[in-house]
Picture: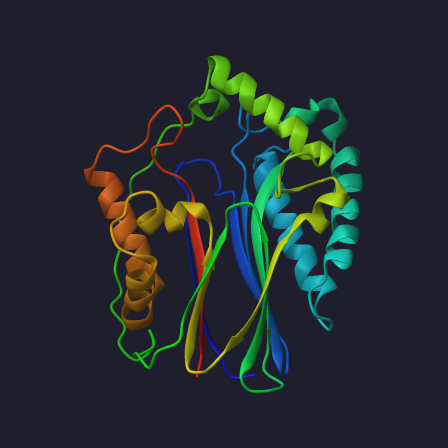
Length: 279
């Protein structure tokens, strides 16, 4: 399968690994791509179960590793994802997760995109959990490889804040919401509860080529859905013409020079994405 793939990922804490993970599997006539965004920990210290990564970061990384293994030869399915989540729950418990309150167990947003090129137009199946995004551009614009413009984002980091900066009623509400998410109530997020695999918002699309597909975390989609620096279509044109790094550059430059965040929103967030070009 002929494709061009590029990835970007940048965290917000200097000494804490990003809790976003993006990846893909390329098969002969199909591919699976994913973006996983671990939800910010609500504990007083970032590392509780593991020494060098938050529980959310562990969840995103281990899930990505299992995707590479489980879907090497088969298309994505919610049933198989359910099995993977059970494997991770068992592993988390063995690693000491039972010592954590249930509201402290990891939660993640995610988007999985299965692309099938056995026929034309291309078939794309989307499985979305919570607020990771996917955008598609189907116009004949130059790909990133044809007109590269490498850009460096400003190296700006925030300090870790206990409970991710939330306190009082906001924190109590978040604890309650995490409890509901672990029970599978009022949420489409992924958790260590295997039943959460069945909560996907699904979409089937037919795509004509050439096409650009971008999926990623909500930290990256802040460019259009929070800051309104440009529309999502304009963002896709920017990526198609100058590469995914140009979108991250626009995001971080704005956040470095503007007052962002409020009582309900972190000033910055981990930002990650994967760009797929289908010629």
